[in-house]
Image (tube, rainbow, N blue to C red; front, side, top):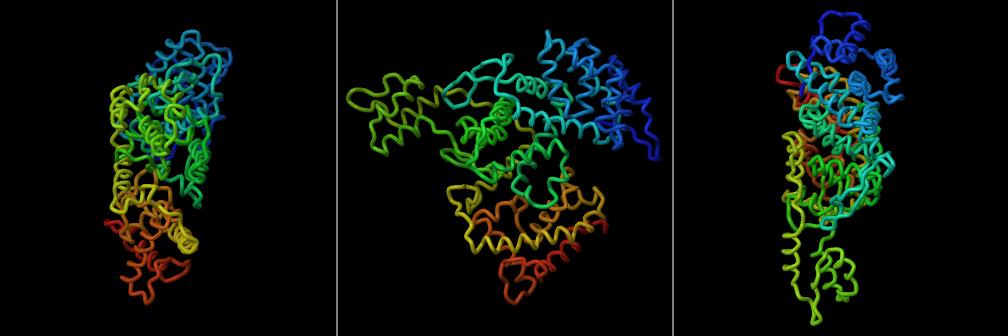
Length: 518
């Protein structure tokens, strides 16, 4: 989905009267391409901050409609527009609609407005990213609110949900989670189309970069809403055993939206493991108990086969230790007086037959690319993504990594002026995706990996965590040093040293020098 707008080439003044006309027309259901254009032009100007938008929208009654719960169709349209223009308002807007006397009527008006904006936008041809940017930020704001909302309230419903594989528990599903599902599932909706086409890929990229958020500069290039969401997530990568149940609504949301990759991450964060039906959708191999996704270790939740194997291996009384599990799983008559009546294979077969069918993964083309990269890593010859094969980085290698990391920080500083001279088109030619073209650290690491002949999916953020990843990176450095004629190649980049200077020179002359000579 691309929202389009005409933008004059010559400088022009911001005309608030045109903005007010556009707001009034959209509020009254009269939407034309020029109205969308006027809003896009207004979003271009930094002085049109949230306070300015509040003033314009409140002049039409937005705050009064929200506070006094006025649910007329024009007011629903006005507040839908407010949620588009002020991303932080989106969660409050959804709660406002969910608590209406007739929520379905509100949703119908909201969906009609979104469909009308999409229909009018298709009549335009040039495009600018300002309204889509707001939509993206609004979704991040919504996700942040989901993890701060109380687990339940009188308005929340208690439904069955697949939280523990075979066992179905009744759990509270907050109103805001259900409202978010409705917003992102609407076929002709602005938020839903943008979520499927762009946001899912943006979130995947962001999750992949969380281990590197401690590096200088990354977080400053994100919007306030995106930075807030990712900053709260960072500790779960830094401390893998840390869990927090308040993230469970996000796991539920992404499972219901059929995005199992995101669901797996938030189940791991909230409960410490991943239900088998979700784990099996994101794992490239069957039968494994652990895996890695977005550089986070996922632990598969134990099933009946695991419990039985543990009981047999430990030589304990299966009847005594597993009676509660047998009752909950409804395996009546599993044990007979004379001993175990079913083999492990029989139980697994029974479980496979009885368990609910896993949600079909409908990841869009862009998120599938991220998935493919993850699978490629997990099935590599060295199998370095299997956490069971990794060893913690040694003190010696930790020191070598620290020296190299300081040199790369210096390279980012030194190369930033060269990067800033490049146009978006030139960066695209180099191979830098649109959503990271303002991220100098990403670009430098991209070029370093290219010069060291590492695979593009190689994760720099992992090399300081385990010996195998560091060794792969160090071997690439050593090979590069040998090619440059170093007398004593040591596989380390020292700040101010010859290897750093060689890399900087090569990156300037080759990686940051597009074919057009720009």
